[in-house]
Length: 394
Ligand code: HEM
Image (cartoon, rainbow, N blue to C red; front, top):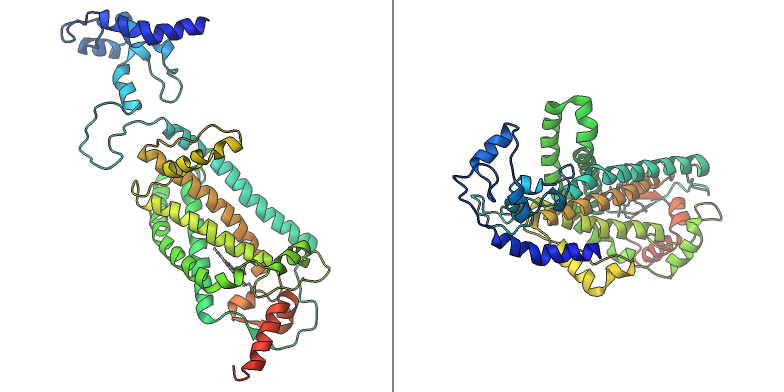
């Protein structure tokens, strides 16, 4: 009941009260008027008491405003709250010399929310994810050991990837590794590198890192498109994948189930790289050209229309976003998806190198030991042999 009365008072009584107060001339009044005078400001700077009771009666005292200690808290009637409120809620008549899309948004509450996530949970959970994945892989190596070629080696090899395919793969791999390292430096630098090397050294590193990250991103995007076209036909799901997955790829024994050129595990890696890598690229482009590619208001609107937030018991997602908020969401999304893909790639690098005997040759030399191919990709070997029988010259 008390709340209802207070609400009624705020909605109806306050505006009437505000209009009924005679506003004194701000230039002549010293203390106590409804409008702030220069004298008030000077007195406050000298730590002298200012009688702002009238102003509080009109625009609300600190009791109506967020605490001064909270982010963006105001001092209510003790400051120019009307002005600050207008700036904060983006309804002031603001003109700036800078004419960019975000120039007239001088304050936005979501800035603190984003910064807190970026320097808090994003870093903590990201580090757990990458560290945890490395730990699991080390544990896997300890328990399972290297996956060896079980049968006798034949001494014969089969061509697995042509030079242009290997070029596409290594362009993708090298650019990804550089992007991952420079991305991690950008995210963790403030917390990890500044305490270790100081602000000056980190400033140089940060400028170089940003330049490298922004420019190498093009190589990653080009390589992503290349490998998509090279390998998409070999990565379409089929019946053999279900059998392969049901046997867990034979990773813990029982023989490797039959597979075509790529087994189900590799197809999952391929699609993770395409979908997550694609999403990282699009959010990266949005960050590379600030305020020009806005992705989130539209996506949130679409999800709200489908009622998606309700499926997980959430309220509708905010779809009226300031240009800065668009960038903040793009940054968080870019970083989260990059962490997930990096963890997946850790597992891929492990299996493509130390984790499996004979695998690296496929991308190193382009040729693999026939016995390796028979054990891991038996259906593919049959296809290759059948083709060789039809076209013996090749
Ligand atoms: C030093 C790092 C890397 C090594 C040693 C490595 C090794 C390999 C090898 C040996 C293969 C062929 C597997 C086979 O013959 O069946 C392969 C395939 C592949 N690699 Fe990598 N790779 C590395 C980094 C990356 C990165 C960073 C990406 C993507 C961001 C990537 C994406 C792929 C994809 C999509 C395939 C085809 C699907 C698959 O075999 O899983 N690789 N890699």
